[in-house]
Image (cartoon, rainbow, N blue to C red; front, side):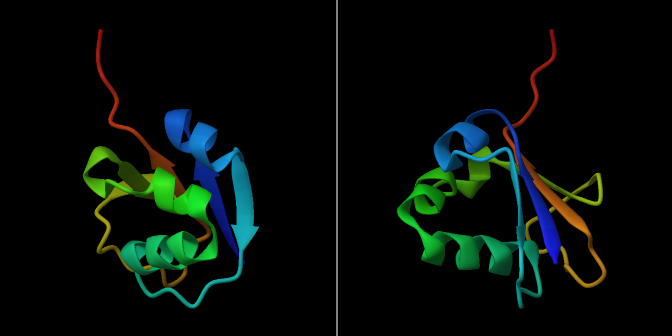
Length: 82
């Protein structure tokens, strides 16, 4: 079971702050493809993954990162400083 956490406008588009999913995905990109195939709201949220950042187990990674042994994946927009 994988915990997925959504932040900011990703959470707003999906309508959930977090969820647990069963997945056979090998990478973050595979997970995104599975989510997009589930419902339209995921397709909207992940329409432009270049506008997203991802972290696995609270470490910033790329969408090609493997999911083996991972407990949590978080999706969020890039942070801006101020």
